[in-house]
Length: 368
Picture 1 (cartoon, rainbow, N blue to C red):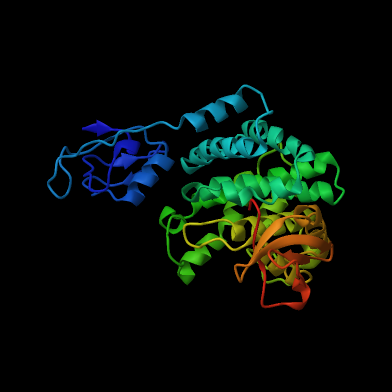
Picture 2 (picture 1 turned 60 degrees about the vertical axis):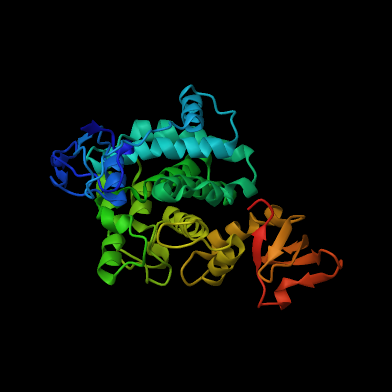
């Protein structure tokens, strides 16, 4: 029985070996398929497979009825038609879906098509000048866990370009920073898929494999003549840290390219605030505090200062819930301490200063 991967269910028995577009074996013959196998088949763009009419438990196999996502298709068609007047969040989701298509081609050993990548990301980055910082710093709300890598890459692109613009880079440069942010994790296609989709903590050897992804990413872009050396270095160095404890090279301070320093902050913020397969999300304000503590140690102080400064208009007047589950409204924000504002508590009108209450933190900002 030949079916699409989306119609498979765990327990299906594969009758023939499946190979990718580069003719490399993906799943051997007679494998009893699990949910993980089905995900891998979809991500490698396998159109159909031959399976037994009986499941491994002897039951009859009933192919799953697939209901296509009209909403996602409509949004993608809107983008492809050249219109960019849809809500920014929808544009972001549509771009993540388009990026997924590119990523799947790279998984099948196809080279990066930079013109297609630019056509996909530049219209979205152009909109940075018209959206609020709240929209930028709330991208984690739209991530779909199973497709985290695709949503994350596009979000890092957006946040990196946004920070570059706030720091005073010319548009040409902050677009380059955004492009580097998009491509910095392309080398994850060279990491074992079992590691990428692992739900639990990684072993030390698995983590070492993940730590190779900046090198893999660099190898994929190093010979592309249409991108700058700055973009290529940012792709290689986005996990380097100011104190030299980053990877893959362990370089520090001025040896790290300025674009990579911007991406490091954007990448950390979005990763920690997102719900991932192997780790739950952390409240944004708590993540921001962690980044602030690491300035001068892990992150560039100028980038962190810009990052914190761009949060001021995000918080003032917002409704918040604290870690003790009490709620209130932010009435004053110190630009140097945006995560520790003055809050008017609901029900009592008492104003508290989080700066003097280290045991509390903002767990949720209204709408985040």
